[in-house]
Every structure is written in C-alpha cells, then in structure tokens.
Image 1 (cartoon, helix red, strand yellow):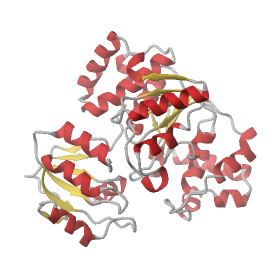
Image 2: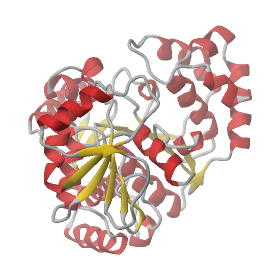
Image 3: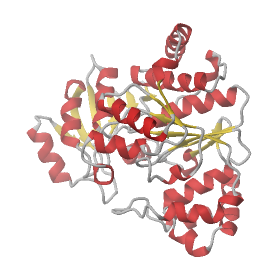
Amino acid sequence: MLETFLNVKPLYYDEIDYTRMPRVYKTIRKELKLPKIIHLIGTNGKGTTGRFLATALYKLGYKTGHYSSPHILEFNERIWLNGELVSYQILESAHQKLLTLLEKKDADALSYFEYTTLLAILVYEDCDYIVLEAGLGGEHDATAVFENILTVVTPIGKDHEAFLGETIAAIATTKLNAVRKGLVIAQQPYSEVYDIAKSIAKYKKVFFYKAEELLEEIDLVNINAVASQLSLAQYLQDNLSVAIAVLKYLKIEYTNDAFENAQLFGRLSKIANNIILDVGHNVLAAEQIVKSLKGKKYNLIYNSYKDKNYREILRILRPIVENIEIITVEDTRIEHKELMQKTLEELGYSYTTFNKIDNSKEYLVFGSFSVAEAFLKVYRG
C-alpha cells in the first residue's frame, strides 16, 4: 500500500542528494506522458497562486492538476485533480504502476517528496495542464527535472537558508536557476530579485515578464471584483493577480467566476467566528499577516521549528498579538520549549500553554503546517 510504502521514508533530511531525482527520472522518462507544466517557485504564495491558476484552468475547460506541499492532515491534499483532491483509489493505482516502472533500489532510495512528485505525474498524465509547485528551492528541486512551458516566480525571501543560502541573492539565484522556457515574476519585496531574474533570463535567452506588465486595466477591475467577492486579504489578492497574469500570457480568456472555490485551506482560513488559521512560517508570511489583520488583537497559538527565525517573526507579529499560547507539536525539529519561553520573555510577551479554545477570545493559529495539524487534531477531536 502507498501509505505503508511512504511511512518508512523520512519527510525531512539534513542533507539532500541532488543527483538522485534526475538520475531516476532519466530511467523512466520515456514511460511518462507529460502534459503542459507550469512550474511554481518562490518562498511565499506558491500554494494559493497555484490553486487560483489551476481552478481557473479547470473551470475554463482544461483538465488540470495542481501539485502542492506539504499537507496538513491528509496526504491527498498534495494532489488536486480537476476541482477536487484525488481519491486514494487513484493514488494506489498510480503507486502500483510506478513500482513496476522503477527498479526496487530506486523506489526505495527516492525521498518522500521525490517519490510523491513522480506519483503525481502519473496521476496527471491525461491532463492538459499541471501546475507544479516546487517543494524546496528551484534548480535542484525534484519538480525541476521535468520540461515545462513556463516558470512562475512568487515572492522570494529568506527561508531554508541551510539549503538555499544565507542571502536573498543566493536564495533567488538558486530558485531562479530552475527557469527553462521563460518566467513570469510576482511583485518582489527585494528589488535585487528582479536583477537576478533579468540576468538569468538573458543568459538562458528566454522571455521575462513582471506579472503586472501582463495586466490591463480591465484585469485590475476584475481582480478587485473577485477579491471583494471572495473577501481576499491583500497578499491573496496579489497571488490572484499573478494567476491572472499567467492566463494572459497563455492567451486564455478568463471569467471572474472561474476563481470561485479556489482558496486553499490554511491561508488566513476562518475556521470559526473567533479562529483564523494560517500555515505561514517565515518572516515574509508574518509581515503579510500583520498587514492583513492590523487593527485587532489575537491570542496567538504558536510554535516553531528550530531553524526558523522565530525571534524576528514574533517581533513582527507583536502589533496584533495579545498573548501567546504555546502548542505542543510532536516533531524533533520543533524548538525546545525552554528556549521558546526565554525568547518570549525577552520580547515582552505573556504566554501560557495551549489546552483548549476560549470562545470569548479571538485566536490566530500560525507557525507551520505542523502547528496547523497539531491544532486541528485538538480542535476537531
């Protein structure tokens, strides 16, 4: 079974073998049918940008897959097909087929994400388009081995520095080196990303568009209308703009209703009248959260991985946080509670341990997919 097979693979690695996926893919490339692939790279906004785009393509008459990661509760959250999460029956069938294509040693050696990426390609073989979201990085990501028709670049910031580099320039270069045919780039918080994108596009002799260059006045009117209809926060509206820019590049006419039900769970999702949940976990995400929720105070249900700049994240969140409730997350990558408490005290936060929701208070759940998972398991029982 797929679940049993994946359970023995680690979800995360301290070191990554970047030669493995290209080598294994080469052995089965002729057996795979690749639809038109739109590759999403960046630090923030890949999930919602991809879901806006994939939903619109599907509603406009194209068979479409959207591959994203990680999942919150269920594995099939990663593999969306024609408007819904793919069934486990389809996943199991694709798994059995993939095992017949791969040599056993390769199937066993592939990481969780690498194997899942190949699995998704099999699920999507009858699609017209795949919106394929990179997991970590760009040029060395498992998703970068496939030919694509376009690279879409969402906002780039600092994250996963141990793998991608310590500076914005290093991170952007690693991500943007994945470009093949050309790129459409979202508005960037760091201007140097544009310079690097232009340089790489020139070197590779491919086209380069800023997303806003593809939008006309009528598109801006449509974006505002859809954002109002769906009650989108500003950063989600920005992601919608990028999706529409891609449709314009593809010369696909869209309608505003093509984006209905396109929001991805876990992105400023209001799961109760007094609870907002967001899977953001880096500085860029924290900045966008504050812009979106300014003017109110929340009890922050929070925890963080050791390798995240949680001190800076907590500093940024200060204007919208009344109190912090530290949620227990069973993961070896989570920061030690004593160090988290020390940081909170140094930043002047009051804190408790999360046990249950008090319906008289407003809550923001934030910190990572693991925090969201831990909270939902308690909240939903």
